[in-house]
Image (tube, rainbow, N blue to C red; front, top):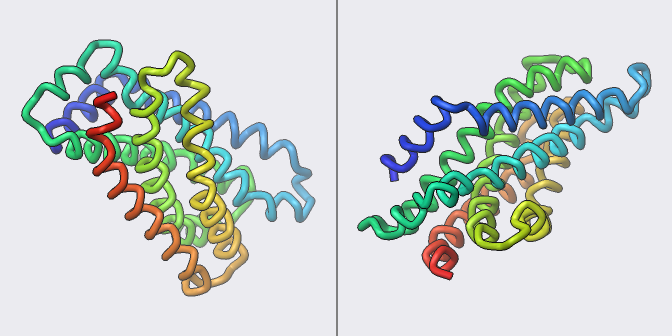
Amino acid sequence: MLAILWKDLRIELRTKETLAALLLLGLLTLVVLSFAFDPTSPLREAAAPGVLWVAVTFAGTLGMNRSLLLEREHDCLQGLLLAPVDRGAIYLAKTAANFLFMTAAQLVLMPLFVFFFNLPFWLTVSRVAPVLLLGLLGFAAVGTTFAAVSLRTRAREVMLPLLMLPLAAPLLIAGIQASATVMAGEPLAAIAHWLKLLAAFDVVFLVVGWMAFEYVVAE
């Protein structure tokens, strides 16, 4: 697993294609949606959590589309499947790589989000960070599974969001609600139930993806 993860990280450090795509789409989403609200309107602050998770969804979906694309284009996936490696380990490595790429993108996008919506920097970042990390892990878990499902379909760029986003809806709702609560000044204890839901979502889809990946890539 660590060897596959290190291979993906080395490729990304060399090409920076996935990270650049995530940053560009996330930045465009933040810029466009930030100009949709009057800077003096209270609606701007109320819409901020939704805007953050829309940017996460758009950029994350793009990252999932690319997660197995290089393996398919260079027939590396066949080599991985023929290697004496547990296929669940391949899934965990891909999920970890997707999680790290999305987290790296958010490290850049989060300060820009705080700037565009004129939010208190440290208060927002420190309180939203646990919600965001749990959300990104769940998004990577479900996205990697369905990226493998849609890998051999003819319209995979369309099929992936159609398959993934309905199942990711509970995660997005929990992320938006928890982010809105902490951005309103409530303590982390006030979102304990949302954090538990996000953690449960992560565990369920990591286990399901790990168990199902062998059958998904075999078809």
